[in-house]
Length: 231
Image (cartoon, rainbow, N blue to C red):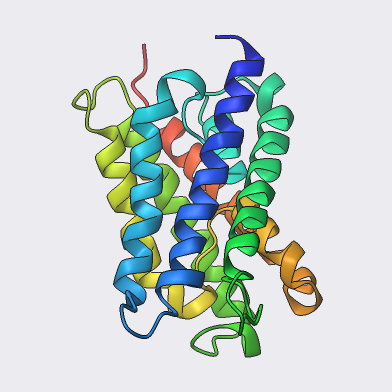
């Protein structure tokens, strides 16, 4: 597949992930008459990924996340020459999704930016969790997400069900970790919201790059060493 087509798919996929997932938190979860709560936001993130695994996965592999690209590269499933272009496309797609979300949300007369679904720890954690808890959460959740992805897309796995496993896996991860960090496991998603919030969100953004990538790399090493079929 042509690299430009892959990058376009990654841009669109990450755009949809941010608009769908963060949009559910900023627009629907905050709307008192139909507030969807933690479960609804978790499902929204899972559904965005599930829909585009089937919609665009055959074009780019449906990464939509720099940590996923790193994990697949370490796991031997992704060409390292495409790593940086993929990450750039993902970050730009996320920013595009956040920009559209901002334009929609700011159309309300009493709009206040607030946290804008940004990720944080300490005073900026939804549940008041500190740096160590946030770091552990993001590393472990991303590690498990990559193990799900690597396993579900293995040639030995049942064909056609990877999108369901990946989408439901991301839903479960959000159910666990929204109270801790507002759930990142995706540096592009974190960057897109932090750019609009600025201030504390940019100051804490480093964790939401470092921890997911570390978790993804650990998963790639584990899968390649232990679970990958040896020829």
